[in-house]
Length: 372
Image (cartoon, rainbow, N blue to C red):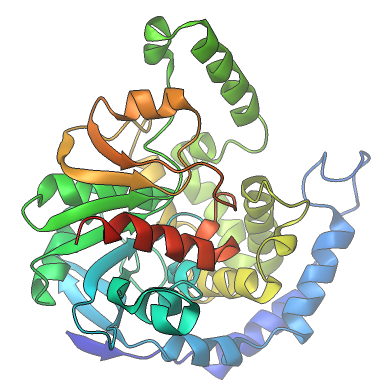
């Protein structure tokens, strides 16, 4: 385990600002609002702020407040935050971020989890928090070959927790992390006391339709209509991630536009992303992708898969969700998961750790509080 500190060269920051200043802006296409993608005026305002108002050094220092390390696991250098609670009896918890995100996703969540006393929570429900960067994201090494899987990442996380001396712990995640978290429990059920995910345990597929009643089929049809909107990044990143990575790696505005498109589609509770998530937090995440050149390498789990399936074979460890969706989702999830926590009405959208960190922390504490 080697201590790690973020220290970006000033020349890299100067290069970023220079590229932003020399952006070759396209014409605005006809169509109202976001109907053709990210509006030029909106993006230009955001890019101008990135160049002249946003201060990476402030957020670099903020990230460096969290103890960080790098260790080699399964041939890959893995970067992670490790923040221990001062509370006696704190439960170790490993958090896995999603895409297009990074450890920045959890910067506002770590405090309420490690120090609930200071955030209106019960100090008996504190956590020692471990936040790894998924391989290919941020400061973690990208898989050099094809064939990387969620199972491989989960095995790496089990080894990481072993090295940290944690024999009994919880696992949590959203988006990609919602697939990794249950897999950690499937691989090491003797060590994991519970699995908490943000948005349920997958989505119904065509294979589930014959087993649905009329009401459930109506829910499925509505879900399909919602999922058909926006940019299908799964198909795009399965087909040609290398092609698109040239633009993302060479043009910061190209990367910003892509990230803004996805954050707009995923922050369903607000008309624009910064109405749900602080603008500086969004830009810190984008800047981290830019400075580490990981817009392409972070897509391995899409180009190395043909589809996403329901987590299977994980009925030994209790599972809970922050916001699991309609009863159909729970019924299907319970085929392969021991669901004990499925609340309704929790606030926030897809990026709940960024949108609603206090509510998110409270739900995580509530779930694991019944399992300690």
